[in-house]
Length: 386
Ligand SMILES: *Cc1c(COP(=O)(O)O)cnc(C)c1O
Image (cartoon, rainbow, N blue to C red; front, side, top):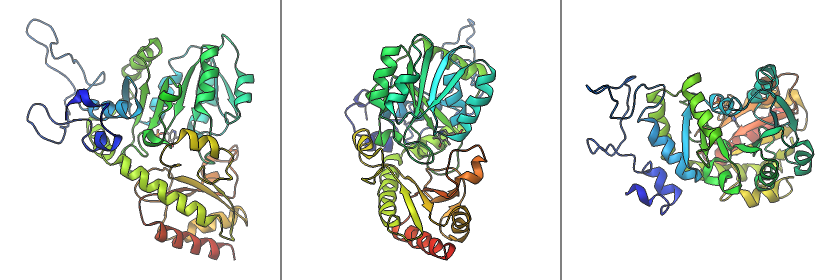
């Protein structure tokens, strides 16, 4: 495959061949791992190979990073040691006193960091119901708001924010728009094409897909001043990915399109069947027609509504916890986006300050048979709600 043809091929093709990530030196069809921490200086004191030290860069990062940039339609991608390292790098590219808007409902560890560390360092963080475009518009402070951060679908109720509408607001206010697209993946949504400036991923989740790597990534629409600061922060703060993790990540990404499609099909099937289960009071899934953000999701998500859904257990918190205790196929664990299905009582994780309902169980649907997954969960629900 010729690298210049990247626009010609589908995501399935680009991913399967890791965007032509073969080894150019030995002709191996699998990319190599590059463990060296340092690079030879030439006798004339130059670095003709262009690399100096692996905290700044490593050729092994390029396989996953270039593939992700191609899938997102961005100019460049950077890999980080975790999703949190990637997300915080965006905020750390701002200055004290800058006003930022972020969702009320979002990945909890980042919400906690914003309210704690970022605020102590002088950032003005305002949490807004970003699903409500009017609320975002009202929160914007012209000249002061420098960043709008979105997450859609948002953990763990999967609320949908209209990226294109918020992008217009950000643009007219001179603010950057960054989107945590971990749950949507580039297979379902391309935030840059909807007007976002930066896309963030916890690559720990769907991108890697096998629950065996902690990693994060950012993709930019343009190599502008903000991106230069982010790039500098990556090596300056040093939250870089290990070479072996970068290699595992590219291997996981080879099957991203097929895994995401399987998870979407399974999640939709489960959402529909669980809607009719007597022990379930509500199913939260953007693919259900009555779900609040369904119409926007149908517009900005192509090919599926994601592999994440949540259910609310009619008999309340204790019945929800008991349901998670009774499943035998679903694994009781946090995280998401792996090939194996996970179940979690979110409020137990997030603690008393969390806005998450206490009767909610978060489901990360893997690629097992939806029939098996349904039977296991339906049986546990019935037994726990007696
Ligand atoms: C997991 C997750 C993160 C944090 O990523 P880590 O890789 O765990 O640091 C951020 N956003 C979302 C939506 C996530 O699911």
